[in-house]
Image (spheres, rainbow, N blue to C red):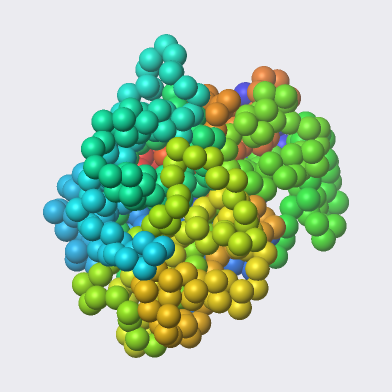
Length: 511
């Protein structure tokens, strides 16, 4: 047991630092703080708030989810659902047995209304037919998981290949075929939002089926997702969270000292942007993959082993943003839940180079009608990829103006009143996030996510578990989700507890 460093025991337990106060970091901190063996724990958070990509803002007289929106698969096997239930953050409908047993296959519900760029409505039966075709093909892609080789490298190429086969058998006039392809194009854009990618051509086919879909009808938090992370923060001892403390470099494989503790040495020293230093025995890194990609060359000293650095480069990390529009009066029907927008000149089979300046909004998939606002009527639009990143560079006024024109065009009402306000996310521009979430990109596999999750040093000879890794991008089957992030934080806390020969607490009994 020598490699643990006898110093830590002498000083009353190891010093642990968690970098990042998102749900992964909070999960690790909560697990370790519940243990008397870890009295020296700090969470260093770069910004002024905890929660990371879970971010609920009071707006429009209610709560707008700027980050994570749903619990994906709210059922007994989902730890986020369990924790939310334990904290009393869900309503009766969300908790109902019926809700937990719905199998969505991970697919979004069908739209209540579908508008085309000509101002005509698209028949919902046609939309349902194309949805059935598209999602049937998506389900087929998952079957390549265990095959020796795939017919094409990406999900996008596979979908296009199969759609070409279907198109060959379509009857009817050219206009009808064009409309079907335009509807399918919107489903490709929906899938880009789900995968957090610019194009499905970037998403690897072979490992695509490794992502696990839990049962349950995706649900939201009536009082905001951030209520969950706020409760996690509130459960921690008072001085654990350190805000506005961005980390510059993690120095490891060292022998660092602290004036306050003469004679004690630490293998890791965390250097912050403001010049402050925190020595530690163990550091759990939970920063977003987008941030790691950007800071790869300077964030670790010595640099990460080649294999780990390669995994960080190869795993995909893209952008999905939301644009909330508030209206005086709804222009949609009272029971409308999802509005889809279809651009009639678009087709997934034609590679249209995005002309960002004039047509970024064509990547917008449509809008969710948000239920919970008392006096306001709010739509939430979703947009992914390079067009989404371009949208972040525009002013609120420009975005509002463009979307007003889009809505006037697709509804066929040139006098449709402009929205009275706009709120949007800008995850690509967020300096400590640099995007939305991870996907397994062409050229990478699930092994890369496992590689990212491996602690350092790899050999364990230089003192074990100096740097540990958590976050959604380190979970092989639940990447891109809050439950993947939560589980990864618990995983790394348990790894430390195991190192110190402590009884790892089993997850709490099911509620």
